[in-house]
Length: 244
Length: 234
Image (tube, rainbow over all chains, first blue to last red; front, side):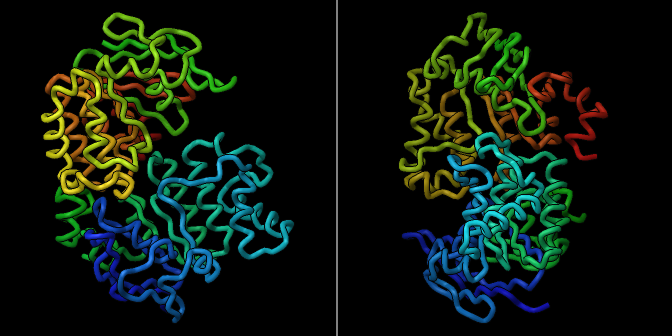
């Protein structure tokens, strides 16, 4: 598998707080990379650094052989990296379709083309493309789905999903897992932050674990879930994912 | 202690709760499970009077409370930890916590409340002078739960407290809430982590489409085929 994205000793400080500390890892083309770690470990910050919402204090982020750290989010989106927001951040005053059109306009200069792209994207994530309601009418599952659709409509080669399954029932999680697998089949590389271990273990080809801003494990789901530091800081020894 | 009797809630004309009955006894641990949009959050909002009920009544200690404005609910020592954190981003962690203890009975116990909050979530102590808006999502969730505890509640209502928390911390939070309940606080819990919920509660209700469809003890719910299939993923 060829490498699409690489973080090299990336550090992010907020004042005296080191949110991400010399983190290095690579993402391979077409893989689903799970990211786990305790609360405040730096997972969302890593995502924000990759998409350009934060500028690294130090280190390099290389996408398709090109350094992108410090570039603004709209440029990075144009290069092909977008993310969803952990706190779902829809345009609540706009119809559902228009929320997705906003994403699609990145690559379609004509509104008609963007609308057509948005409709295709809505169908991909399981919405009726003719839907006329507004985001406020949607329940949690559909709001998460719409958050994904808007990011997807920008035509990313890497899509970063930040806890899109938070609060879903087991049945709903299964549907979400299938949807994410479907995106990978279309050739999109995915990075997924999630605390739902059942979902992350079944989805991920590989998992990177963080604690206190530093990478503590990187490997197959089984390797990472049995890594002593991951058990200590994140899973707990009595987790069903830890072999005894 | 709390008795929700035949309440209905409508958003515009769309019914969210229909003729719903639930009760929580003194010191009891009660859970509400159901899929998204079933009406669980609406139920907690109705008790806090954040949404008006269109029928029925809500009694607390034998007194009707459904006509009280929302700000008169916390003085009854009913704490509501809302879904989606809703901490005050421009205030520090400790200021957020102190706001949870704004009513006179809780103000007197502020020191104990802070001690409890920080023992439950040491991370909050490390971050006590930091603005809440700079916390990670999961840390904000910790803060929301702790802010609810600061009220020194007789009834603690928790709406999806496990969202965004790391697996180990979810267990710790549930254990801690159980400890608090054992000391006499009644708990009304809504959470998608049904296995853990069933492990803590005395009794529970399953809500679908705004109605109670199943109710019983934790064991009864665990043995119910419909619960197993829809909520335990078995």
